[in-house]
Amino acid sequence: MSDKQDFDLIIIGAGSGGVRLARMSAAKGARVAVVESRYLGGTCVNVGCVPKKLFVYGSHAGEDIEDAAGYGWSVPHDQVTFDWTRLVANKNAEIERLNGIYGRMLENAGVTVIEGTASLADANTVVVGERTFTSKHITIATGSWPVVPEVPGKECVLTSNEMFYLPQLPKQAVVWGGGYIAVEFAGILAGLGVDTTLLYRGELFLRGFDDDVREFTAAEMRKKGINLRFGVNIESIETDNAHYAVNLTDGSRLNTGLVMAATGRRALVDGLGLEELGVQLSASGHVVVDDYFQTAVPSITALGDVIGTPQLTPVALAQGMVLSRRLFGDGKGEMDYSSIPTAVFCQPNIGTVGLTEAEAREAGHKLRIYRSEFKPMKHTLSGRDERALMKLVVDDESDRVLGAHMVGPDAGEITQGIAVAIKAGATKAQFDSTIGIHPTSAEEFVTMRDPVA
Ligand code: NDP
Image 1 (cartoon, rainbow, N blue to C red):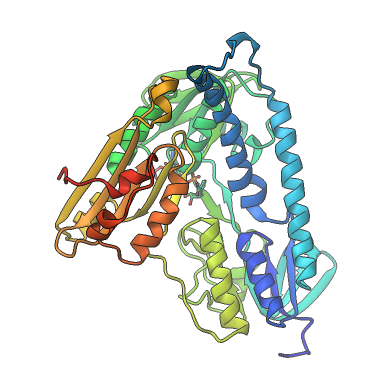
Image 2: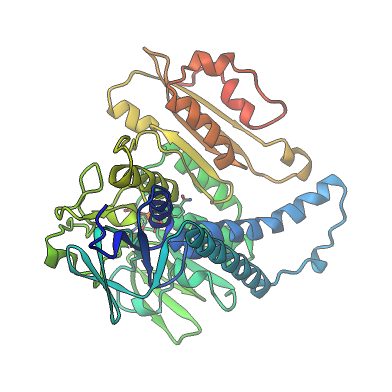
């Protein structure tokens, strides 16, 4: 490796993908630096997956307390209290702990961490404030940032970034959008007692998920008191900074205590100077790369949310490992984006892997569909009116399971194992010959005998 440059690799962005690439590359003997302007760990650790999951636990604890009554516990409703500021403070302490772990991990790996905002002076030079660093390779791993649609009053709209540090919970909230973040935050807020309305512009939220999952989730969320309003969008918002009046496209008006937009995320490339160097950006603003994360400029690569592949931490981690092997290892391995399992931590959770029924039909498969809906055992005594859904999409000819979908407690945990089976090409007969674990909800995936379609 060249000694003429300060580093072999400078990574801009210390999020999930950047940190994984840094550690893997340093372990292979490369001289690596990471430039970070905000926080170690990126969106996932600071304002994404981790604090979100902690908030989901916090929100769901209220139901757990109520459910305990059916198991003999005495839980006088008027003695149960919730302190939002304590949840946020405890969450913040955990995030700080994780930031420290990330810092130590990078330090122990021999990676130089440079604090500040980076821009590119040329294809091998990174400028951070007054300092200039040269490197043989540069990787853009700057991630993504929430987008708020252009409507009058948009400046008073919060995003997930601010929600994680909200000073106090309002009595009412409007969540705008119908994707992962919207349904997760609607669940968090409603579980904490906020009168929550979710507004989605389409006919049914969670576009891209299996239709049964979408309908089932909507029904379960409505049972929890969340006001789901579909086929409507926000036209404008007026506020006196305490109350918000939201004017909708159907002519109606909503008064609320907070408006949160969860309307997608854009690639974060501001100020890097990429286009000036010849790095192409797509129409959606993502950095254009080939299958090996290579941009149009030979020394510059990019990975993670910024390249527009699925915006998921495990995808960025896998990309970091592939790119590290390409730059400093045997060059082998490439990304396989098929059958990426994913969970949505709405309440109850969604877990999904493989094709939806609609996708499988579109691809020309003749299908057998297996579907089961049931009351999870826990709720026989808790009395809670919550149900679970499981669904398998099977290719009739080959018997291969093309997709598995679940709505219910621990769907994410359950789907991870199912994803291994689907990735390995398991057939329905192999699912059927697998002995169930009893009594669990998960066993339903190996006991669905009769197709419903
Ligand atoms: P998504 O892309 O998932 O959803 C965006 C939502 O906003 C969609 O419902 C979309 O509607 C709607 N929308 C977009 N533009 C407008 C507009 N102008 N007016 C009204 N509605 C609009 O984005 P999120 O922000 O929810 O999350 C970003 C990504 O982060 C996710 O896609 C996911 O990859 C990742 N993520 C993963 C999580 C997990 O793994 N559990 C958790 C949270 C985030 P339409 O469907 O009509 O386009």
